[in-house]
Length: 164
Image 1 (cartoon, rainbow, N blue to C red):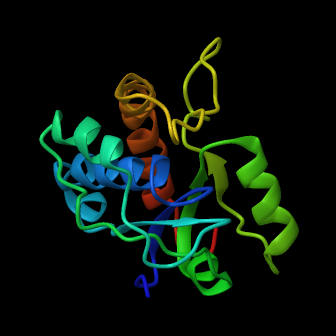
Image 2: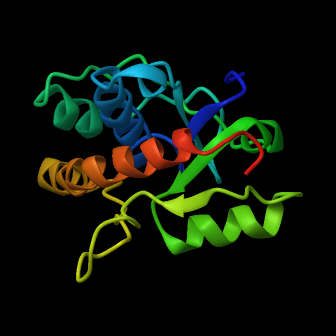
């Protein structure tokens, strides 16, 4: 179970997008000063079975950036994960909607992974599942593009007093 105060990244099956996003965000935060560096990042799926291996193309796409996610195993999203997250990031509006419908209470800090990019950037990250490596690399690149805006958002979140 993820520790209280973690960042949670959510997709459908937790074998493609959210494990890649978890790896990329974890790597980015490790290079940050102060409280950001110590934030834990986890991922889960809204429609998955626990223990499934990450997609081979997701592993390859991230290995090209020097990040190894080969040991990742899928996990189902739980209310406890949501309750203890300081921020939850979905890949699509459907992920946000599913979380808002199923979670009681819904997380207060629920966003899309690319939500903080300036217009006209697309905010959703399409599912590369079953596609060629190029589809996984495109999804990875969309995530990489979003990382600086996410880090800035998390800095602003960390600067707020507790309970605000």
